[in-house]
Amino acid sequence: MTTKTEAIGNKVRIGAWWNRAALRFSRDHKENKGWGIFSGKEGFLFAVILLILWQIIAVVSHQKLRFLFPSLPVVAGALWVSLPELLRGTWSSFLILVPGYLAAVAVGVAAGIVTATTGWLGRAFMPFARVVAPVPPTIYIPYAIALIATFRGASIVVVFIGAFWPVFLNTAAGAAAVPAQYRDDARILGLSRFDTLRKVVLPASLPQSFSGMAVGLALSFIMLTVAELFGANAGLGRFVQYYADYADYPRMVAGIVYTGLITFLSMAILERIRKRALFWVR
Amino acid sequence: MTFQSSIAPQAGTEYGLRVESASFGYGDAVVLQDIELAVREGEFLSLLGPSGSGKTTLLRLLAGMAKVTSGRIVCRGKAVEGPGIDRGMVFQDYSLFPWMTLRENILLAIDRVNPKRSRLEKQELAEEYLGLVGLADAREKYPFELSGGMQQRGAIARALALGSSFLLMDEPFGALDPLTRMKLQDLLIDIWGHSDPPRTVVFVTHDVDEALYLGDRVVILGASPGRIIAEYEVDFPRPRSRAGFFKAAGFRELRDRVLEVFRQDAIKQLEYGDEVKSAGEGI
View (cartoon, each protein chain N blue to C red):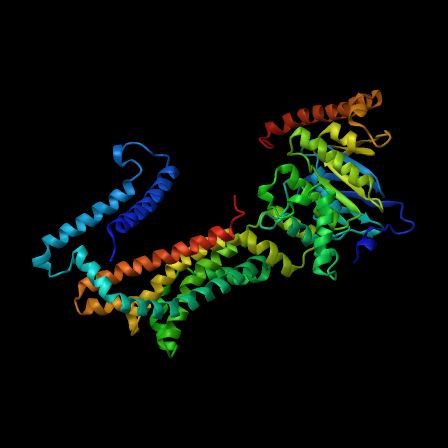
């Protein structure tokens, strides 16, 4: 049981976090006036208004739309009840997402660096990359499922394709634009090609690589959930699809909220890693 | 290649680095024209010139970072085809890798020269070189935690760690405040003077006082196209004391002569510049 002070403590913490985020935004945008007592808390205010609006719509439409807009307590209840199932789904989804995404990062970074620094390889591969990269990766899903025997294998490949291109293209752009100063240094030090790539080009293009990884991670989640809508028997996308089929909208909305939260958390973890790895960027 | 063999001059070679009727340009633009220059083994040569005189380009040619369009560069009797660790270079912009600590930066050079030594020996060598430039205490720091002067000390330590006989320095103190600059000038002269076997330094600058105070010899480049317009021996005994040197009548006379050469070249530039401007180029 939560005591009153604990609950308040949590509220204060979340409020403080939200305010910090809002403050960062207003600092970046040099705009601190015009909202009176809500100055600096607009973000928090917006979220509260959004929740209140949702609740009003839920209550008003309750009779007519049969829980198409479940009210907040109902969603919270559904979330609580479904939590074990959602956690199992998360595990199942991550068994697809993590291998696919990590493979895309490893191959994308390595291939990007080598392609951008090898003349003939760049000339051979980049035109192909420019044509293929913009193709929406979701389009490959049916074919991947047809080609690969297991659903999990097909989904991993599909996540890989989705995350690979942004990682590859950003890394290649970064590796092609390594400041002349660093390249000169590597030459003066007489570094071998391998050492130059590993110790100079890789770190120097890491800022761009991380931009690619962030886009790639967002795309991975899209690929994952869409693939699960097609033919999974577990997972986050499957959860939402399943309860939508049975018109259990409270659970469906809970699934959407939960998936959003997981995505946000994953992005936050990546951001943390980025900050750590790029400590030297000023 | 070991530390020793890259340092020791070959018997019978009078000149360390020679530039033989070398020219360099991009397309029609001539950056350097017919450069003849001999850098003596063990000397401190100042390359002085206004911006646009191609002094940095000349240094890059010596380093093997750029290729002459005609003529050739010879290092101890062998034509220069590319960069080599017998010719270390220090750039104007702080050139340490920002993702490595000072020690890791130095280790990069040490790994290259002494690949077979143990990890511990390499660490000790790195610390030795950092001690030489007064950075022993900052060895675990990253470049962004250091002042410009300290970063440049680190760059010098890295060039020393390469064990190069020739140190090519491209306005290494150009971005430093006057006091730090003086300290580093004295540090450089001290290290150079105590090098055993002797090192040869080619020092590019556009600061007349710096060129004269540091150099055994000053070679002056003129602009458009870059070419050698004058050359002076700086016949002052070492160690030079800063106070005595800048007050000496001989220094003042030399300085006036150098500035006059500069002025003549600048006047020519301005006249030539008017012609160019009317054609709408070079603006």
